Image: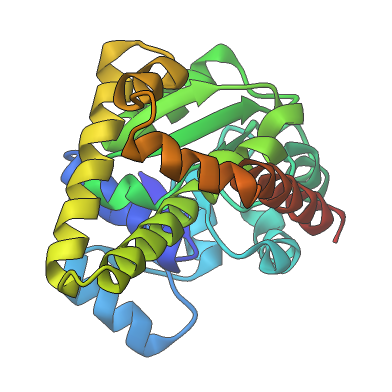
Length: 264
């Protein structure tokens, strides 16, 4: 039995992903703060929606998907009811395994996960890190939960804040880029719908090329960049406006914010 405690955007994304991957509704519990939200989850997914305490008592694996600022109160609520053999997976940005372990007490195995919203289309990037009491078996169980909805990578927990900034927030950077490119198309006289189709397909095609070719992105970019051509003119403008430096600074800022969330 798996319980997802916290069914906001990421919690619901994980819930729907587990069900698409073959989990039966009777094998999954969910929690929700509001009665209308609970009713919506029951109707949409056919799962039981229970209290946090009941989920902690019942499920073999607990996925904690509440907002970082709500994690301490959730752990205080469920700590007396979590047996020592439960696997606890924390999916909140900035929340360390030691933070969870200290509040649950004992030697409960904790695995930290950072996923992203493409879990909704089974293309998530999830990174996982073991806590002090999590074994190889616990990591494998977590991988098996997440692999049907995307790619899973093990990293040291010291890299989790960087992963949050890079892949956890990463989809937003691409949506921002697409938005800007579509606006550019409109500026050049393209209808919005046509501009969106062109940009989205270009992004999808480029991503698949990058993933499947094994080539470095520089090689692929240079293959499109002819001497004196249109592409190099665009690249020169991007460099003149320090777009690369802006990305470096933005992702570093996201990393720093993740650390702030961890510090409370």
